[in-house]
Structures are given as structure tokens and as C-alpha cells.
Amino acid sequence: MRFVLVLLGLLLTCNLDAKETPQAILNGLPQAIAGCERSEFRDYGNPKLGGSVAYQSPGFVITVYAYDQGEPHIADGITDRAVTESLTMAKKDIETAQSKGVYSDAQFRSEGKATYNGGFETLCARYRLTFAQGKLAGVKVFSEIHVFGARDHIIKLRISGKLDEEEKLGKVLDQFIPALMKAIQQP
Image 1 (cartoon, rainbow, N blue to C red):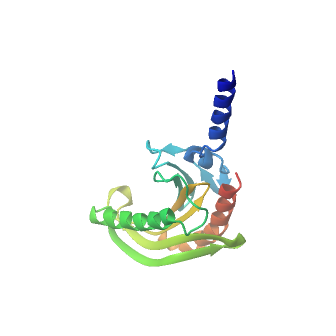
Image 2 (cartoon, rainbow, N blue to C red):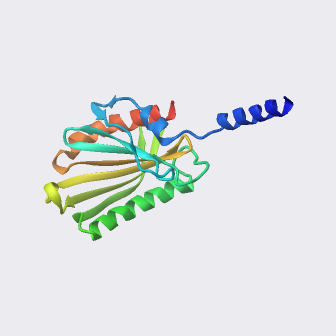
Image 3 (cartoon, rainbow, N blue to C red):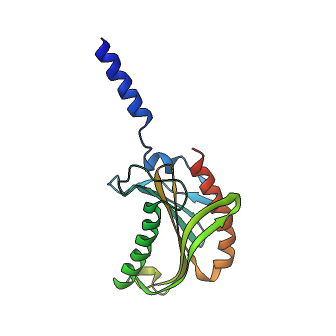
């Protein structure tokens, strides 16, 4: 009997320390933020890769990813090595997409720390892209990548919007990003 109680205690302790899943984090987000509607969770089939949801509004889409790359702990904020490496990998993904012909033009605009109302910070890289394939061929967009750590995961935002509406959509982003970060940090 004593063995069973010890085992039960160990199992309960392990479950209390269990890491949240990307699906639990992303499905806990609001259905709409700053007028953008959330899609269903998309699982990438590998715990290291996590999953995503997309928020859409006319003219642009914000895809929110949660993943951990197999790291047991990722610090909140923007200084964790896994967070900085994630931004580097995301920038390389854009270069790879251009070399594969997804984009006919990819212009790097800026990189650094972005700060939002409420003191929220992300690491950010900004681009202007021109699609080269499919029904979007020739369409020019602004694109932003934002990354930060929260709840032991890397949270990455991939934002794409019509280039000719960048100023208007930027105002939506100024509301969206801090509201999203607040929702993620307060489960």
C-alpha cells in the first residue's frame, strides 16, 4: 500500500510539472483580436515543431506558432538562445523560399527589438516580398517576423499584408501584438 501511495505521489508531481502543449496555448487564445478572426489549430505532427493558428482580416494574415524545438525550458522574453536562434532560422527560411522561386523579390528592411504598449517586446525582422508563383504571382506584401519566449515555448508571429495598405494595417498590428502577448502570458 505504501508503494502505491509513493507512486501516486510521484505521478501527481510529474503531472504538475508537465509542460503545456502548443495546442493548449494556442486554443486558449481569444477567437478574435483587433478585428482579426482565429482559425482552427494546425498540428505539424512533431512536438518540436508544435502548431499554429492564423488570425485573418481583409488584406492580411497573422500566423501564430508555438513550438519548443525540443528544449525543456525556454525563458519568457527575448533573450533565450532558442528565441534568438528561431529568428535566425525564420530569416533563413525567407532566403530559402526566394531561392526556390516562391518570391521573385525579397527585400530585407530591418531587424531588431520591437516594443509595444504594456512593455511587451519581440525580436523582429521586416521584409517586402513579391510572390512569384500561383494566384498571388506579382503581389507585393510587407512581411514581419516576431519571436519571443512565453510559457516554455517559442512564440513566432509571421505577418503578411498588402504592401499598399501597410500603414493602415500597421495600426491594427499595434493593437493586435500587445493583446496577443497579454493573452499568451495570462493563461
